[in-house]
Image 1 (cartoon, rainbow, N blue to C red):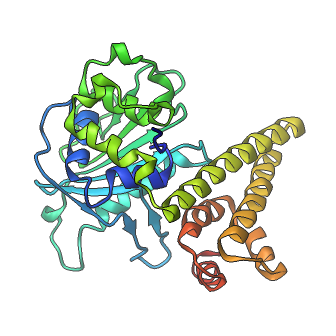
Image 2: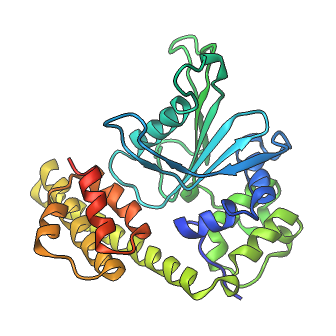
Length: 312
């Protein structure tokens, strides 16, 4: 038996964001946000795409988005690569989700709390040892809460979690272990299978339950992440060798462009020199957005439409 890697976007959405994932997501969120206490009793999994309803703002692609039964919204992102400005993207996504709750003419009292849960396969806060970190609005000296602290940022740093199976006691421990280690397992560990929602998550993660199209998409994303990590590492090395930040950024960009073009050829066919030039002109943020969006492309026309709508 083998399992798909929950750290890959496709797999994460399959496990936590599909129609059959409601009970799984409730258990997971209670573990990550409330130390396993059954605070969340029910929720609705909703479309994670945030369109740019404000002229000039960016489209946003999340992994999972849910509305809790009391109206609070949780947005979840699984991030494997330590890309530039990731912290700013987290804050942007949370603020945008909060703002888009209201339509024209709605009163502010209709706003509900937004919790941005971010699971990273790298260290966000190298000088801190805790696996889970939470941020909210506080007064900077006396540290009391802002009266309406309705945006909260939560980070789960997987590299800091080093417990073995025999050490897993809490529901929180078990879910973090599931995210970090499932792809390396050959069977469901007994200590994990005692939680019905985790047992069900393993069933969904069993790659024998995926069709060929799903397996192909998962493989494409795995190759993409491997290529991206190689490009980022190469870019950093080039930047260090040149001794300037400009060299680092340029190296990362060149690597990203090459990898995106190669992946696009796999998805939609040959890329003309003109389209290649337009991709070359994208900045790092635009390249990152293209890298997220391109797995939905089925033809060159989809790529051209995206370039027309998103490039500066």
